[in-house]
Length: 413
Image 1 (cartoon, one colour):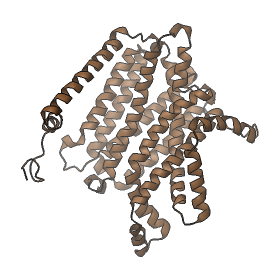
Image 2 (cartoon, one colour):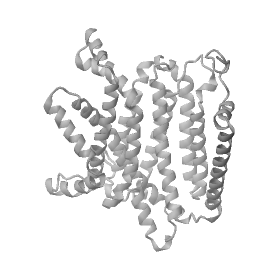
Image 3 (tube, helix red, strand yellow):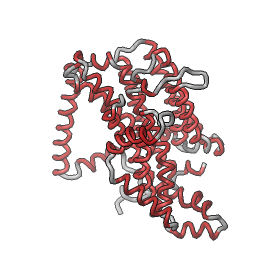
Image 4 (cartoon, rainbow, N blue to C red):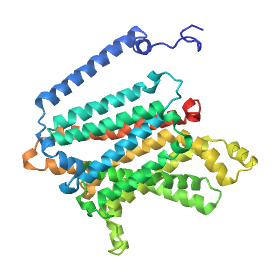
């Protein structure tokens, strides 16, 4: 075996691996050069259009509308407070997921993906407020929020292994609690002025609807996956009928049914707001797909695992929770996160039922005679916003996979 391939030999550098993969032969080299030249030409053309030809006045004039819709200006301090809390929770969770033992080299505490994510975050925090010509006060807020994320990430990655395991296990509970606090801040209550969901819009409405569906579709999908594998005929066939019915119906059809049917079936005082009707439809729709992803993870765990757990004295629920589900969730995690990303993208259908989500707000702005013909600028901004949200979910998923990897030494700290 060559020394470069020997498990005991030094690992090849990143540039050497890149050269081997892209220029392993003459044909590979020609294809790499051709594709590289095409990508450079496309990037140059896009950059030229972005800097010199595009007219960004439509974004600058409607930045608040894209962000929060018609949310009252005097109450927007709540959203800034919620953003700061989310930034702190993101920094803590990110740092703990990357926490390594103290004897590991410090360079390993910032993997390449983390450095790339941090660089993109800093670039967006510096460029976007200046590009939108926001006031100095708003720019300072964004820079402070970005610094809060990165400082907490660095601190927890460096000293997170010293945090007692009992406290680390409580960190996931931070997100549901923060979500409840965020809903109080957004909608009002507990002494705050009520803000009706009809005044929510833009990115705020998209994130509220998608996060609500993501949080609730996972436990519902887990129940459906376990029900489909149950030996009780009623539970098994009930889960099968639900999953197959939902997967066979288009989401837009279910959204229209949710908006219209619930108004007739429920009395006027019990029918939820149109925003929450759509959020519940998204939840029930995504739960069917999450159930199938989780069922694949459960099928990957041998039945002997549960039998071994029962032979050690664990009951059926204990063996399922402590032995089977951790292994199944680790296998199904990429597929489940893929469904979450698809769910986030499916929120664009809310504009078809009259809700001013991010896409609905964009259509309303482009219908203004003052901004006719500015669709390219608007859609590019929407693509960047959705990419940032999906990339955050993807990075979190990969970090969680690394943390749950049995060969990762940080898992046992």
